[in-house]
Image 1: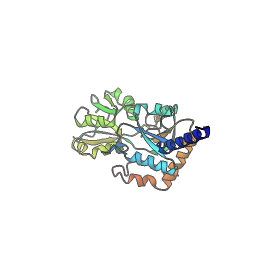
Image 2 (image 1 turned 45 degrees about the vertical axis):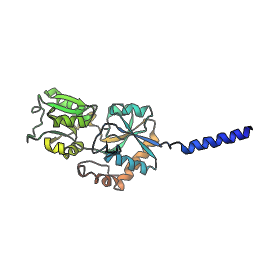
Image 3 (image 1 turned 30 degrees about the vertical axis):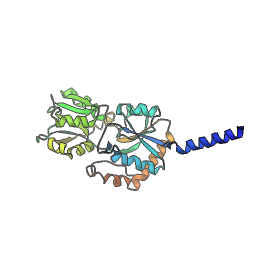
Image 4 (image 1 turned 90 degrees about the vertical axis):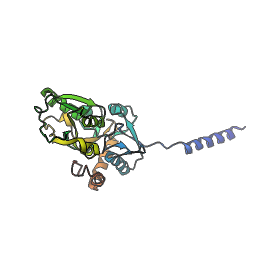
Length: 268
């Protein structure tokens, strides 16, 4: 066989492989593998759905990028970003000074106040003194864990951490916890379920300590690598454009439990 023939066959074979190989996504969007409804959870078919999934898809459409959703364990999601396994974190991650030492963030794309829920008994006193000797559940490595550790544990509150918010909610419903502290938006969603309606009630909205921004940070932002400044600028411009176009309200109206309970970008 002549060299030219072999070259032509090899080129044709390479072209065939290229045409049949799956297309690679332009951006890998990292979400937390742990369910966090109504922001991100898998439906009965295994598809990821929720407010934050809708936001991620709208954001990718705004910047005209093909994106791939990559579920990643919460405690490994920042290392996954810095090691380039994913390109953007969209996982209800609070913008904090500690995290900004490792990664960078876009402007915030939502914020909600924290809240405490507990048994449906009508007692709404959740002051540190009233909670002394009680057990409080929080998701690990969150602002809620930081808040409870600093402001509630010294008063005698027993803290129990969970890998997922669902686990904490389930233990509260089963009577293995006295209270749960989490984002109010996620807790409203739980309280709207049959399980939540049967067991529990909102006790209090927790005021974020204004003189201690290291606890709850600056709202929820999309995490990017520090060197990806062009991507950060593109995402920030997209968030602003989406806000001006009313896209955030359009997404949120599909989640009645969130309407009026979130602070969203205005586009100003």
